[in-house]
Length: 294
Ligand SMILES: C[S@@+](CC[C@H](N)C(=O)[O-])C[C@H]1O[C@@H](n2cnc3c(N)ncnc32)[C@H](O)[C@@H]1O
Image (cartoon, rainbow, N blue to C red; front, side, top):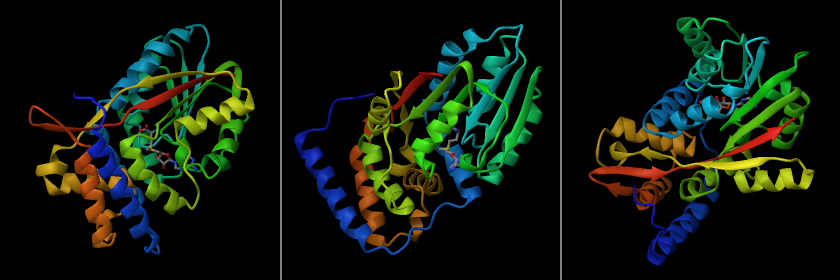
């Protein structure tokens, strides 16, 4: 995929569109968030067209699985677990090390929690015990300590991300690890952040802000980058339903209910950041990984 930086003219056009978007969004009273079922649906479509989740799963297999010992159980807490799309393959990688695995997921989206429970049942992984807590992480309580706590693309949504991290660190077992996959603010998120900030009425934390927070706290961490791209050909010239699902997931609101001028700016911006390669159209969406020892 072509990863050349944008030309000066493209950068200028991006800035111009984002400034227009800010003005247009300031006139919108309320955004309509995706309901639980639509979030599940659009997230599945988005991840299905991206190589990012596969790379994140490989990362868990390479970096975490070797730490498991067959003589003691391994406890995992997945914060913002979603539908199990990620957790089942991660649990499979970890379970292959023959340790008993206790896998706890917490997520306020009840529809996703039900799907996760069902998927784990269907996968029937030997030695794996699963518990799903349909709640916000701020309401989550546990007397257990965890060997691994991960937030994969979920910290943005926490009402107080700093409090969530401090809470997670206290839930770590001695020698436990906290893993946060969190996006940098690149071209795609420069668009999405406008919607996130308005919807949640607070600035959204991206990877650099997160690193700054860890530096301020004096926490030791390692930071890496997982490059990825989402294939958006249906958005450009294909199935309009899929195109709409991709757009909804990117801005995380019911985008058809946005005023027409906002929809038009979003469309133009997305087309501007698409990279065309042999008839396929991609948008880059890397993610940073933060690895913190407890
Ligand atoms: C983009 S999804 C990521 C799901 C999963 N980790 C994955 O990578 O497939 C973000 C998830 O965070 C969840 N979430 C939102 N607010 C949350 C909160 N306060 N506590 C825990 N999870 C939350 C959402 O419901 C959603 O399932």
